[in-house]
Length: 308
Image (cartoon, rainbow, N blue to C red; front, side, top):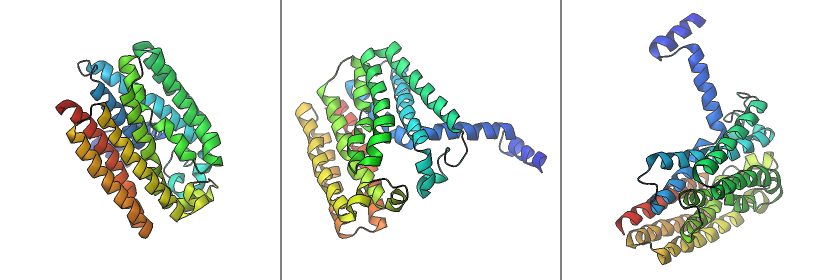
């Protein structure tokens, strides 16, 4: 039977049983980095690089910067999974999907992998770019993997608000890698992601609150209930709308303004409607739209930069 399976892998799937196991193991290590989240990080970082513009004619440095962003952000996510492996095992959403609670990876191997990619990422920023970006990336890793994971998440319902600092740093890090200094524009991009995070994450937390209750994590819906959480989502949606328009004071043009207004109004309307109907379908719709919102808004930032 084993020989038959090897034959199928080799002839039909184009690989051996051993190769398939290797590929599955590689996928498990990639899953430690939370690739879906990292796609968003790399996308917002690339938007900052395209808007800044100095690396457009140097594709190697452009790609290397995004690679280092992935490694450092992936390190923070992997350390988060390592430290939360027992909590993840209690939650239906993560128990079977993540490689540590499911037993697909050893915790010691995950820790070594996490630290290794973090060191490589920080060194890339230091050697090929500048010390400022290396320090920012190291601080982001420590903030998210230690302060957020070990202190904020288990102790306050404002965990995702404060913890959102880490997820919003990609445009700042990308900008400093390109220029060697801070600027107002990437910090506005940071603020957009920062104020987007609560509506996005709390929409998810609302239909996953039973999992958080099992794990005894004080997420907003568990501590304050659905209505209060949705009111917070509405509040942050309005703040996000105002922050997104602040880019107009720093050179953004008509295309960005039109896109930001349309996207922001839709987000606010969906948030307000969730207060009337907080069914799982509506909340999942709000969560899904929040992802579209951020991708569309950052795409508009780049497009507007080229046409303005």
